[in-house]
Length: 137
Figure 1 (cartoon, helix red, strand yellow):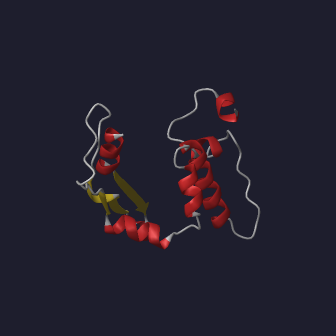
Figure 2 (figure 1 turned 135 degrees about the vertical axis):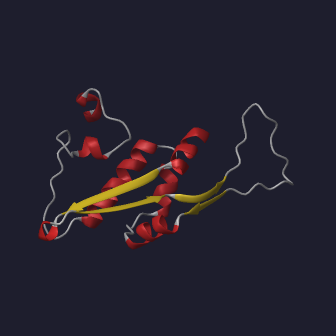
């Protein structure tokens, strides 16, 4: 878990756009990161429990650019659903994808293939499925 937080904290997203208006090459670069600061407490199972009178507050500060991006593109997720699915990451990922897709689909039907390029198997999870039948399962 600690290494996961470290990877996300260190991640920087880069965007590059190449344009050629009037035959003049233009490259537009931008980047942003997710968090400005993290202050997290972890308790190993081998360690003694933290005394009740001591309070350790976790704090995650989003970067301004990341906050602005998620604030401008809100989707209507249910807080209760997120809490109920917190211990089932695959189901939570599916729920978030379904809410996002339902919210962003405009006046015409959308077709999302299971296994084709840019299909559902590429949009869910964090790793590629080595055998497509495992995704179907």
